[in-house]
Image 1 (cartoon, rainbow over the protein chains, first blue to last red):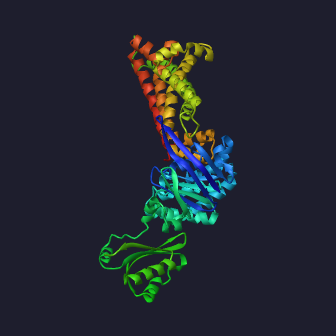
Image 2 (cartoon, rainbow over the protein chains, first blue to last red):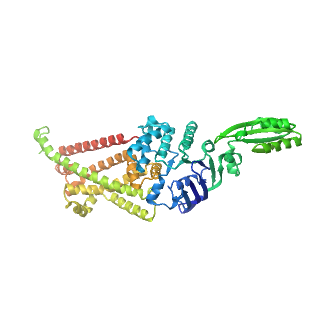
Length: 339
Length: 230
């Protein structure tokens, strides 16, 4: 488990203080894929550099499995670093070494015997699907393949945690998906905790179980990804998760607004998503329902369905129908009143 | 009284003068290259790590080392070689027992080339993507491990090219070694070629020097190429 307590990081450049992290508190459980999302300048990079001990912290504590990272120096610190694997945005591979040597590097540092190293490298290359590139130099690899080597290297010395710092930000969408699936796969197979730093919401939704939203050096909101997707509290969270919503600027919506009734956004979570709520509404209440839009997505094996409907009828019937939906499903919002 | 150009006596005379001089030049350049690269690289490494936040925690101590070494290197590089040979005489005597002769010239050349090699090394390292260094440090690699296993192997092709530049420079510098009796091709060119109007000697030295520089440069390019997998 990683426990971050009141973490501060202040840079001094040209005599001016720049506060990058202003007191972060967060716990990351083992086995999770924990995402940190924020726009640039939110403090994500500072956080990752503090956790990976590339930068000293200004104040605060970072405990991993009960040991405070910030108090360690010299050899102890280097030993602790072996518990982490880092995956970088720009791969940072040894360009003058083969794929094999690149993956071998952390194991050499960890003084793993040669025979064991070879076995492990073959295993890792199998896992990341690059067995045929064992003797290739990184310059011969595509971006996605380089990142697979980066991931294999991060896993080489059996780390407890792997930190992915914008690991997919330099890759094209298809490659990004394959890398994300690989990360999820490794998390499942090996139970390694992943810390994923990104500015892209789809990365969080694709693989993370928990997420923390960063802004101005603070964590402004954190929790389960599914919960935050449905019930975002802060405006930044809403902004990030809005991309998941349905575009309402369409003609059907505009036309619907002009006729009487209420436009309702209904969100269904989990196994009851396929249940016939809309059918029930029509049967039980004297209302008409028009469907304006909807979609179903899956986050962490949880189905989230969103449906935009217009309910029209007498005022009391509409209110009753909305009250029913409110009771029956996770989230019902009246998003607009028709004229 | 120049002998017939194509007579065997003429060639023998040329050979008798140019061959020992060539060996002297090779001796001076060889030793000074070896030692200036060894020592210069070491100083370059220190210059690099004392200004690198990721490799070494920066404090007043590292900053002072960096500033002082930088100053020494700059001073060393600004003194003209002809002056340095004389100025380094006491040090040369301390190392080889005399400040006259080929050995002494090799020491002077080494001293002259060290600052240059140090700067070349530092700037080569500075050109390395710092992400690679961070990746190494984040794996738990120690400072020597990062230098030997990451920084030097990753910059090796560029280092080789830069060291080739330094060696070619040393070949040029070695011509001045005649001043302290160091001998060599430069000395022949000056004493026989210029002062005794022996144009044939002058051309001979130039041709040999051109050949040496060519061989060094071609070898440098070759080794840089075979070590470059980027």
